[in-house]
Image (tube, rainbow, N blue to C red; front, side, top):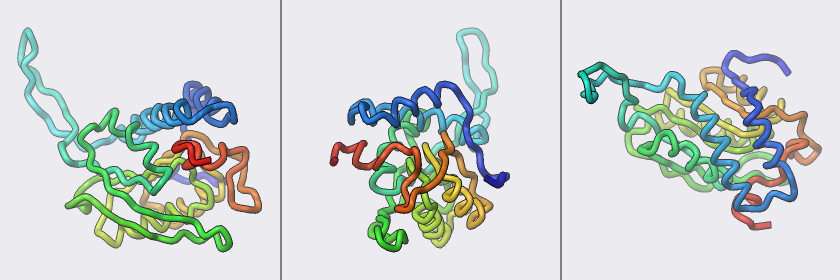
Length: 212
């Protein structure tokens, strides 16, 4: 796969370990959900190394000192429904005050083109750093459509976070939105003829919510 300046694929033994368990057909809903949250927290740490901060004065038991803190209300989390919901708690572990919006997309199984059916965004989102959540970056169609929608709403600082991605999805998203930083926990081999990631982990939404 071509290298892109706006793409970061994490290479960490803890992530590889958790994804191995996540893939397994023997991993049931509760454990699957917890693993998605844990991997998302690790992704969030990496994706927000440059989070907006401000300087404050803190009184320790000994002296006063200057310290930097993340700017309040500067982060918005936008899961792509429904599977993206499983990643929200992982972000909230590190950013408990982050506002949450929702974008509903479903993939037409014949054309593979994403269809929007719902959008509710936090007030003032155009002034926030926005992180789009979707566990599986497959064809890249839903991610591109969601980011197109956010840009139309005035968002300028946007990031995409996925647990598993196919090369085809990364290429589509990176080239369509070179200004968007993309963070992926694991890069898989390819898409199959039906647009599913191989080796993948099945349908993330079904496994998160026990619907199959």
